[in-house]
Amino acid sequence: MRIDIVTALPEIVAGPLEHSILRRARQKGLVDVRVHDLRRYATDKHRTLDDYPFGGGAGMVLKPEPIFACIEALKADAEAEGGAVDEIVYLTPDGERFDQRIANELSMKQHVVLLAGHYKGVDQRVRDVLVTRELSIGDYVLSGGELPALVVVDALVRLIPGVLGDATSALSDSFQDGLLDAPAYTRPATFRGMSVPDVLRSGDHEKVAAWREAERLHKTRERRPDLLGDE
Ligand code: SAM
Image (cartoon, rainbow, N blue to C red; front, top):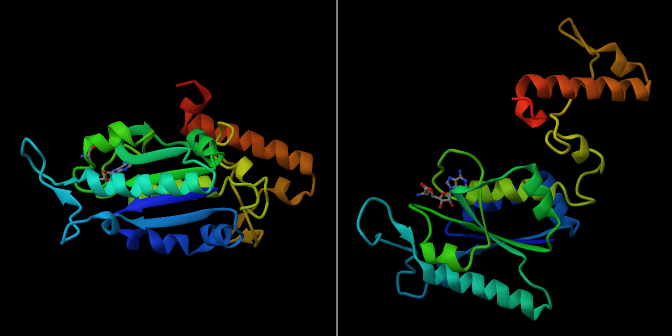
């Protein structure tokens, strides 16, 4: 899978890509994540990326020209390599709410471009013409789309087969099948007087699975009844 992140602040996204699961997935060649600095596509002397909003009001707007130039170059590259960009995602608080279902869907694409906005956001013509999907990571407003883009990258990459050491791990995570995950324990078996439930140390795999399933249901009913359709 290939993911391109288009941003005015490439430094923000660089760090997390260099650690842990994202780093290993890239090293193993399971995902190719490339970061594109929008400023390289600004053509004026000062490499301007933003401008005042028509109609006045607070906040600058990201100009359309560098974004069109960057994304058109990415599309042309993909075509030259015999492929195509499957989805151009703009991260925005007024987008569709990102969730595990969308992560699963996007993780099956070959090539996804993530566009991070800033200030008041991007010029509407970018959204009208280039963007194929708009995603929000939650009902709050951040200053830029870099952290949301990283959230999407992380959620997608861990679903790519071969990325997690144990392929079944992602399957039992919260939301994957509509339930929250069960509690997890590790050694020591007793810590400050608190003991691990006996069933987890019984060695009886069926009983462990039944206990986990019951815990998942219980937790989901308590915390997220909406997931069970019982709100
Ligand atoms: N004027 C926009 C609005 O009210 O919908 C907010 C712009 S926000 C200050 C700047 C950028 O941060 C956005 O263009 C977007 O890329 C990113 N952003 C902020 N909050 C986000 C969220 N909840 N989900 C996804 N992206 C977000």
